[in-house]
Length: 314
Image (cartoon, rainbow, N blue to C red; front, side, top):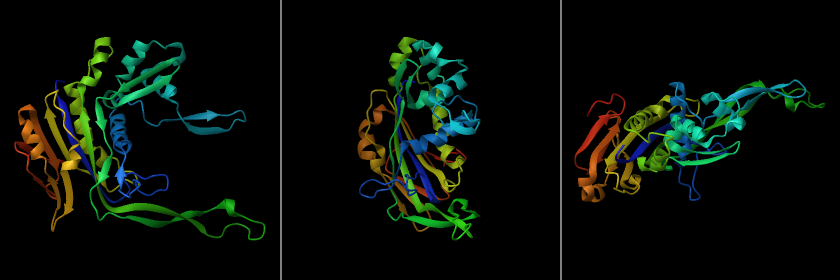
């Protein structure tokens, strides 16, 4: 693929929790700004690829293990075990051919996009991904977290005492959501990252087909990933700027604002002062959004607008 791609991916979170920290509350910076990590966006993409039958290496998978007492536990697989499973390798320790391992790694769709750190069984390999995804900051200033109490259907049997006997009531839990948040992730795709690996003969490089697969999944995976905490999270916006391979653009989320309108949400793109200066090096600009819920105001010329759900031009 002889081009670079710069862009922004937007996710809305309505009475949901897009990316929680270990306290259960949405991730925040030291000054209180709410954000979602790149891992929060990548995981639904990996899950969708896995469900479609693609090879995905860096995703949690489980197996049963019996200990010395015969007790069977459910535990996560190691990286070695996951590699052996998806590539049909009997024992990675007996097959440490670096070229074969690299060739296999590039067959995994998540590695092909995001790269990998693979340090197993004598193989120490690091691949910088062609797709680099930044942190997604919430741009809706009125966002606030809410804690909900949840009544469990079960009592806590561990609370029994000699004086009081068994616990008489079921337990309480909590669920934390944001009333409304709008996360915007910057990304860049640089196919040249794999030039050295192409020269080694372990991959054909990042192709147009790889880009189309990333693009399609990035537009729907957040909506499709309907877990308990993420039901209410949806793909709401995407910006793709395809450029010559030698053009370097800044983080485009800096040129986006979000605000509530009277009838629709309003996303404003103010990047003409940057993009107009290099328009001769820009191949195409595409914006995806839901025109029924969102209005996009942009000062960028020659932009094509598409319905993020139907893919029809707006």
